[in-house]
Amino acid sequence: MHALPFVFSLLAAAALTPLVLKRLSEAGATRENYRGRQLPAPLGVVIVPAALVALIPLTLLDRFGDVDVYPDNFTLAMLFVPGVALLGFVDDVLAGSGRGWRGHGKDLLSGGLSTGVIKAVGTLGLALFVASYMRVSDGEFLLAVAVLVLATNASNLLDLRPGRSVKAFVLLGLGLTLSTQNVEAAASLGIFAAAILVAGYFDLREKAMLGDAGSNAIGALAGLWMVLTLDTNGLLIALVVLLALNIFGEFRSIAAVIERIPGLRHLDSIGRTK
Image (tube, rainbow, N blue to C red):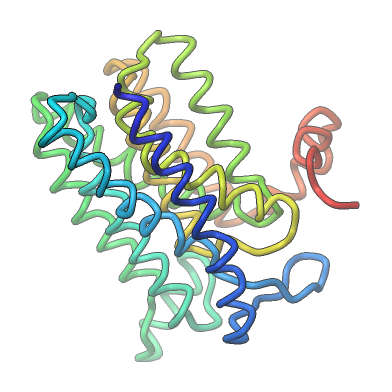
């Protein structure tokens, strides 16, 4: 029964996404992609509403059907992902020209509003709050917070080509589940993972762009997946990798590196329109 959040969210997202896509187009909410095409954005706004719609049948079944539909740690996902997605949406709507920490720093020094800093600080607050619900030591608590924050930003760095952040999320989830045999963690995140897969398909096929609302949600879920499945040593490795990715992405182009490596370039291009 713990698969039901994924199933109901998948159905809700499949019904809502075309409607949101149409509304974005009608409202003129578009963004230029790397090919110079104007696409509806941010389609990532559909992820949280789809999950919330799915809560209606889920809660009714849990309450009146004597069915245990909510996996362990389900609440952590419900606390973290919507807030991070909202911060991403604020960045989608109000972001200035500054990009990266250097750009956001310049915005602040010039007296401007840096939505990137707001997003980072807000994500840190949410990560601290969510990690406080975990029964771990102080060191593990801080480690979990760092992974959650860095994973969220790493997804933004990857989301520069259609479907890239979603593919990375799927590969990460498969790797974590197969290596740890922790299916319960996957079930706990299924209500958002399902909506991400639906929105991610439209992103991959260049019918829309996820925006920061979508990439933030993906990163938040990826961070939670690591925190819920990896032991301390595994989280330390994840922290080092995420930190390196964030620092590299600040000064160099991750897209350029992917383009130079044949295997990664092929994987990156799978499913895209020609």
